[in-house]
Image 1 (tube, helix red, strand yellow):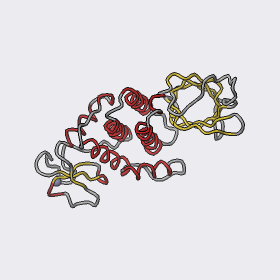
Image 2 (tube, protein in one colour; image 1 turned 120 degrees about the horizontal axis):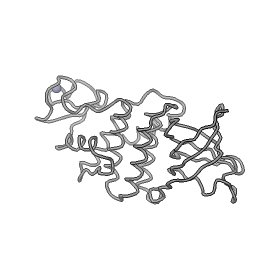
Image 3 (cartoon, helix red, strand yellow; image 1 turned 45 degrees about the vertical axis):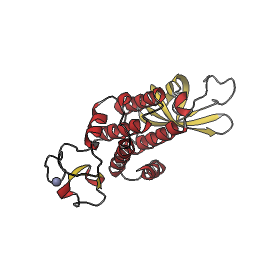
Image 4 (tube, protein in one colour; image 1 turned 90 degrees about the vertical axis):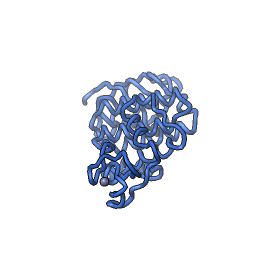
Length: 249
Ligand SMILES: [Zn+2]
């Protein structure tokens, strides 16, 4: 049995049997991992504190056929302030769904781990800008998954899109100029300054994500519709996550 050590963020924690928990973690070295922590719910558990969702942990585990078994765990950060606010919790629910859909499977991607960690850090630090953080997260995660939205020219005629009315076409993954707005279904018009807001969210660290006023909600929806349009096909694990995203986009 291969033993490994990694850092992970708890995406989900389910009670199992008398005293166990089954955890889904996004790890730094193994991607998405499901593992059982035996005896964790006993009062004098050797695991010490409780393993709440969103906690960032260092852990030691051995590989199993379907579930790995966690033998040691240390909570590094609990991000408890994120769990105390419904708005932030909903934002995190969407982010976790997106990680499952866009980074499903056990391909390790340290950048995804880091992005999720920094998003939680940003949400814990700011009560405001939650939608901006969500938008920045989905844009950055789309880019890591290889679907950077195309914003510097019209995806149909390749003209500079800075003049006239602009549209965004999730199926094509980028902006359309006024003339090309009907080349695909599902293109929607952009509010003024949307391009600049998107470019800044992509370029700046997630903790600086701050889109002002009513632009914030429309940028968030755009980022979700872009991500869901490029999510890979359904898998058993990802289905509920996909429904969550469709609901938001
Ligand atoms: Zn065009």
